[in-house]
Image 1 (cartoon, rainbow, N blue to C red):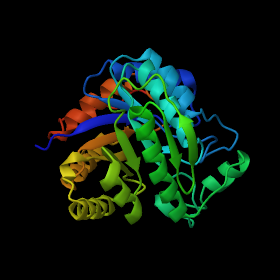
Image 2 (cartoon, rainbow, N blue to C red; image 1 turned 120 degrees about the vertical axis):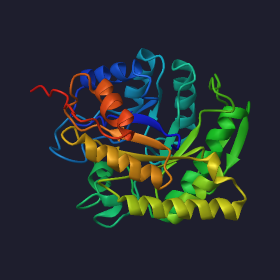
Image 3 (cartoon, rainbow, N blue to C red; image 1 turned 180 degrees about the vertical axis):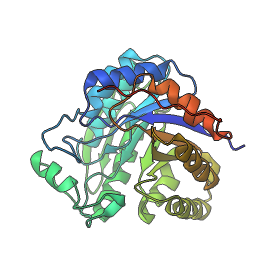
Length: 312
């Protein structure tokens, strides 16, 4: 059986800090779950617009200080919200706080996209979000170019004592970053997305690649994107096995057998890191339930399956 790792994702939208903290502390005690993730939005992108939405890096720092084992990160950080050097400084600090457990997940961020892009129905939710926070959407090509410069800046911050940077989009002078991350030469770099140019950037720079899977994108689409990434790696002379292939999957509490089957399909498609995206509300004991019903469930399903209790 192909080796596969599992993580969880708790999107910090329409849910309290206390509930997220509870799930992460539960998961920290369940060795079958190797990592935990947040996402990076400043207001709800679905459901009531006046609901809670916690800022991801602030929340991640709090969770890093309270967990001991889980690797952790943001799936994925928007490259449009924080200047690259500021993000590099934040990541260095968080890697120190966590004792070297950070994975730097990053993506292009808000770009001009047609309705329905990325498997999300309706208008691009980034339009209202960015207008609310004084941010600007940019063309996709510019987003890729900016992300490429950010990756270079991050790596230089984590490995060089002082440097200048002169890019098309970012310019830095006498930049220093101390303390350096615990991990050397820096935290693993995860790049999220699925476009052809983005996958080229993954092949050039990333340790991990992540793509949303069902229900946003089909298993067939994920498999086709794997082939594109492999082609980029071949063109660049990089061994594609050096890149962890990560996919997000929405969990069904009512139908774990279907979730297990989808996990198997994604692994067969070439993915070796499954991030189990948890719907709200989070049931008590959900981390242990995931280990028993979904992660161990890559084996043939048991004759009797239980559902975690959901409280009002």
